[in-house]
Length: 308
Image 1 (cartoon, helix red, strand yellow):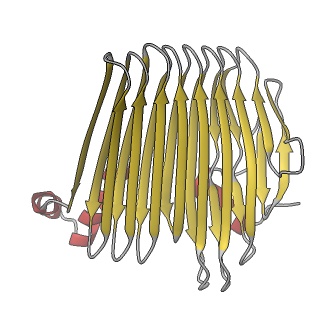
Image 2 (spheres, rainbow, N blue to C red):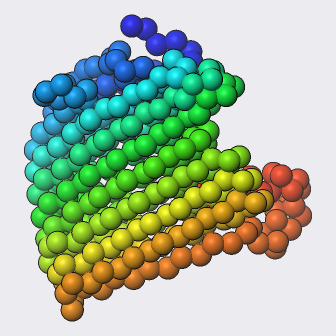
């Protein structure tokens, strides 16, 4: 199957693709893999059993390679569910670029549920980028429900960048992480909601090994009549470090609820959190407007910098 201009526009929005990348890639459109290719160090195959999805295996010792696995929905009212497993081999260093874009011109809801299991083997290093985006003039909703279950083994590290750009009407985002001895996990989440959109994010991190560390950085902007709820739980079972930081900008009649939770099960666990919700500061607007920007341009500049 060929990719048309609409497909490529969606792929650019969620994965910054202008063409088919070299190396390992799997592009899923409306429930089917339209492009799949492995590389010498990254093998992409179908999951075993009757569940649709991928098994992506990154060989031990792989260095500086990227695998693209984006999903796009273009059929109005299409419902999609996929189960993917990613295994990063020992001492490998790789980037996974995922994400989903929906174009919905119909009256029915278009929905993608992605269930991802990620295992970063001992000494491995992973950068995982997942962007969600919706568009279209139809009355049907764009719904995206990602679930991520990640295990970071001894001496390994992982950074997850989870972004909701715009156009997603409803989302329930679930992340569960297990961090082992001397392993490190960083989760950066950025969410934008508008209109009457609703976003729910639930993150749970269990730090199980001595010397493990985890950090959650959440940046949220809620506009018009939208609603967001953010929950983040850090559970320290041993000598470890953990921090949750939630910053949100509230505009118009939107609402945001932030619920951080810390649970220390060892006297050597050091867990902290901070949260701030507020409007754009007036002095920020004035400063940018004195540089020649209109009020709207100044607001857009502040929001873009905040969500970057």
